[in-house]
Amino acid sequence: MDDFYQPEIAISPKLTGDEFKHCTRVLRKKAGDLIGVFDGNGQYFTAKIGSVSKDHCTLEIVDQQTLPQKPFYTHLVIAPTKSMDRIEWMVEKLGEIGIDEITFIHTQHAERPKMKLDRLEKKAISAMKQSKSGYLIKINPLIRFNEFIKNTKPISHKYLAAVRHGLPTLQKLLSPGHPATILIGPEGDFSENEINLASHEGYELVSLGKNTLRTETAGLMACHIVNLINDY
Image 1: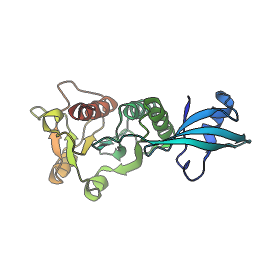
Image 2: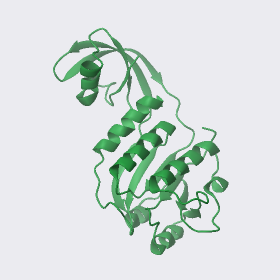
Image 3: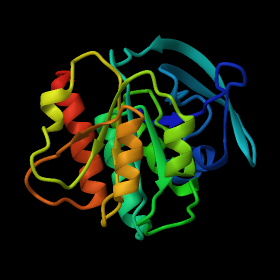
């Protein structure tokens, strides 16, 4: 059974937009066919296609399930790379392994001062359907590093991955079951001022290993470590 995404299905049981086009024009689904629908918040619906019009199809809900939610929360805060392809790849893979939130930050050594989220959200939706997790990553717009650090007070363990010798590895500091916010800098790393500011706000400096990683690889590595520590 093919799966689709419709955040308002419980209120308005129908498919619209790209999901409708993929369902009826690409997969050739028709009235009477059964499909699966995620709402992105952990609900999975089995639905029967009803009437099909030019821009939507109605759905009859046959069954509804609540999918299990992770017992921990992962928030990745990361400087976007110059290449959108690399960012999209990262979001897709993070969606597959299962993280909860991504915030993009504009740092002193930033490679990309502006970005659009439309394609990233599509990648996140595709990854949610691929992994069948049922929970869509929350993707936040670009925000300046200083603004994020000063105005965002996550109720979680807070880490900043830095390229420095002698730092403890992330896996040694993580505790299973606890929410984690992890900061990843650009290819040129965070500036000393940024590191000092984050440290002052309670972020622990950590290493992701001996090798120097690309930004998107570091983001994926950090979130994978969180999953491993939590046996997820």
